Picture 1: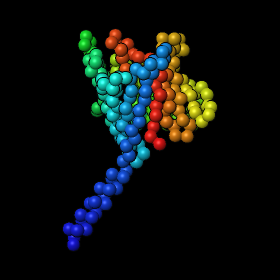
Picture 2: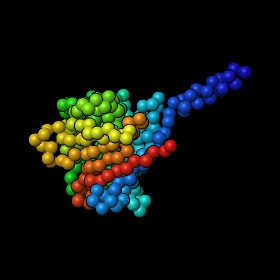
Picture 3: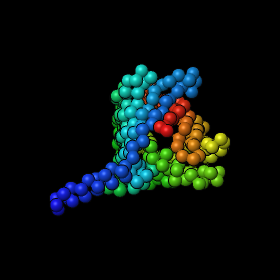
Picture 4: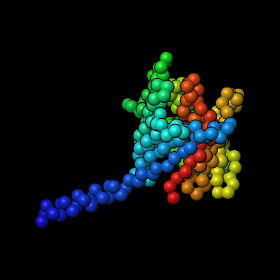
Length: 232
């Protein structure tokens, strides 16, 4: 009898643990900003626990459904700064950020160059890779109040933080559009602004327009409009 109740208890506990985790799968189709052709598709698999991100796997496929890159995110207590690694098999490019012993360690590698190091103290709130989504949600009330927010974004290929401003542009038809610009107004011309549109109710990203984390054969970042679709 004791063995029976122990087994039942273990089943109940296991069921409870499973129930705490939720997997959200969605996709993003990246289109050329000039001709509108489909460049690639992102397939996201985000695991949440108690409503907080736990892991994320992103697979990248060409328009011919050939997988060419993969990215892994591992979230910690601060969801805005997950560890991540990205590998693009087409051009032999990879980059990584991990947190170890109180330091962010970064590295990147490509056929003719590679480097690694540690990130210093950021000037503003630190944001890493897909943690940007979580950062946006954390400052959502400020954005709705039309307040500009500054943050420091990790760029592995430069082994440093780059400071940005997140600027609310408009609220229309239940959507919030924001713009991401370099923090320094003197240097903002070096990088075209990135525009992002979110659903106000769900706070989910709907479209992304600007420089992406995917490179072309010359090692330059691809500019695209990424349209995201989610399950009902």
